[in-house]
Image (tube, rainbow, N blue to C red):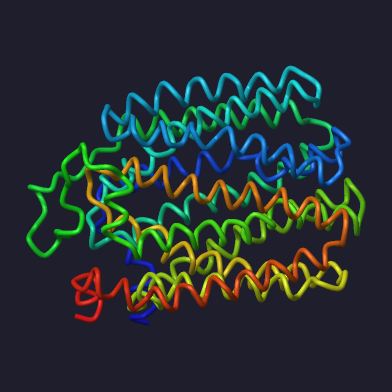
Length: 418
């Protein structure tokens, strides 16, 4: 009985700001109808082939890179909440505008503009979440906010699958309105934790601020294990992106446009359901594992999941595949999100967050671009096989980096072991 109670009560005692973030993430994801269906919109509504979709994703992804870097610099220099309000409002205006036009090139342009401003506010969001939590509770904080996101996604993805065919405009409207409402919640009610208010055992010396003029790359060069992990994040994003790019296209090729979209929406909802059921359990069970061990296990499960669907399987196999993929996603998130937050000085959180975001965008962008060409030229089996191989490479790099990270941040490992 006690282990069950510990799973339920492990989120007790966190700050009020964390519970607000949990609620805001849930509201945003509840209205996230468009992002999971974007590949279907480009393919089914606009008639683009896989390679063209990959190029479009790549071009928009490259536009997001300077926006994220600029957003990181602004986050470390100005008031984060003001940055969030300004850029989020502009982003939502462009996003809602898509509801009043037909699917086509103009919609892609407006969508790209919305994404640029969303990426500019991203580092401020990330830094604000970290500053609202204590260093020693980051796993639970990221676990809870991740849980909230998926509670909303269960509803949002399923509805998106049905709105896709006949009510796409309504999906854009609802998506934009839920995004702005959750932002208002965060700006009004989230408060940062002051270092002076922390007890001695709650502090983390690796988060002590550097001189603001210190170059971001210099900060990362002094923390080479973090720099290596940013490279790993690029590769892992390449792998993860196939969930929203190659998988829906694969389902469309196997089961048709409408049926494939509904099945994909069901799989995304199933993904969210597993997250809701297992995130608290895995957070508790894996609490003694180090962050890098969790990331290794997560990426390994990503690779295993793609192996299951190589040979055009029946529908039920995709749900088995999604089970393995989702467990990997949960474990990876529990390690990935707290990792950099504990190893980067507070003075450079926004800028380093933008570097991590840029790495993930590069991986995702090239993941779509490369997969678009391999899907069209060689078939989905080759794409998924390459993804599995890349996953094995990532696991090997992390295993080597584990020793370097332990030497560079010994107190983080001592805390875990004690």
